[in-house]
Image 1: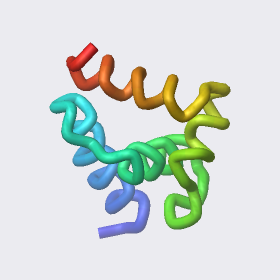
Image 2: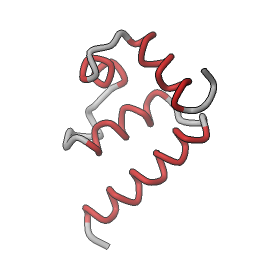
Image 3: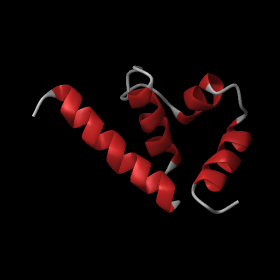
Length: 70
């Protein structure tokens, strides 16, 4: 399997966790990095919040809403 195929598979797995409301902050950061061509090993939740121009609390609320909790 190619690196891109591996990344796409991981992206789908993380998206499923987001949809189910079971994704962690670290996984959400990784999903964001994979989607937008950032380094998933170095991209943090704070980086994801900054990327979306949100506070970390706002991003947590968005994650909850996307996961059906909000």
